[in-house]
Length: 192
Image (cartoon, rainbow, N blue to C red):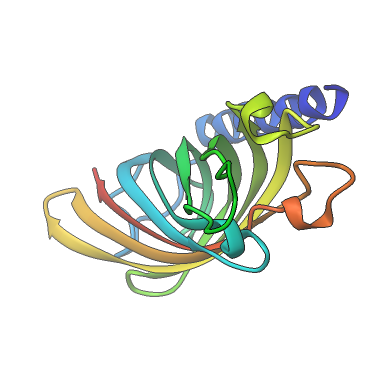
């Protein structure tokens, strides 16, 4: 519980810092931004990797993200959402595992090395919604997610953001090293 509070405080402090930094400066406009904070709402899907793939099939969820400009091609990102990792029906067992339901909250950086193509890295916490159903010891896990993507302009300030990421976590069950939530994911979002 103490680590959950520390991670939550860190995410909130980073969010406050980045919003304060935005108020202090306005970066030069480039082809990757129309100036100001950009928002996106998206669908997240993924495929579990490692030991998680033994008992779980796929992930589906949604997220909202704010991209706050801090330099001409650099943004601070704040992302929150919901993920459901669907359990497999395991043959030969009386009880199949329960779905894993998480509320991820992440912050990070997004950099555009060339027009509309970006590299992004985020870290934060994934809060477990069904701790007792999945037998987790921890209420939250540290997560990190490197991502690459492309923003397709739709006209005006609107864009379609498509990114591929690898997301990994610390253990949900302290005595089981196989309880990490690792997946390859795809986020497709409408941005404005």
